[in-house]
Length: 203
Image 1 (tube, rainbow, N blue to C red):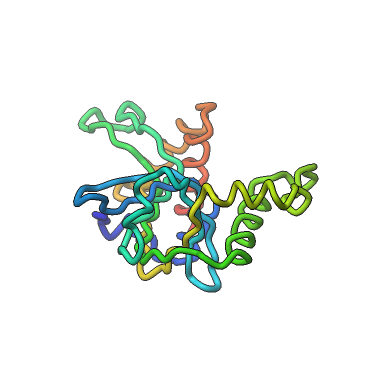
Image 2 (cartoon, one colour):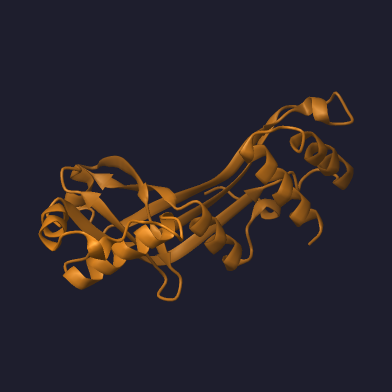
């Protein structure tokens, strides 16, 4: 990924936070000698430096992804930045965004307990704390049948790149003007980018 020095995410914990908060990823690999991508949730195991996920078996990507070095892209908030927000007319539009690229090697999960643990962790992440749904309460035969339709995998992480393009290449005054404008927009991404820009200014 192209990352100018002022946009580089230096703290690995910041990258981990993006992964956890934006865990519906784009997983890219080679399939039949061409790029192929699947959009799916990936769960971070920070301690063991790996990502867990699973494919639907009809998805052809899984058939040759084993032992490949793959790219998982985690898309954080992003938004349009209007040049009309600046103090000068000599400017052009741009886009502010946060993204993390994770590179690693895929291995399949054949152990039933490891697969069930990864599915349980995924459900625990997304279900509400007071959720009525519990995987362990679902009929075992039904779960066994469903598991035949998926292929669990993990990605052993060997490289992480993070990019936070938050107008750091502009003067502080201009960054503050952008923040003010973003805070007036009701969209969630604009609000998140404004918060990240504020935090970056006060580092």
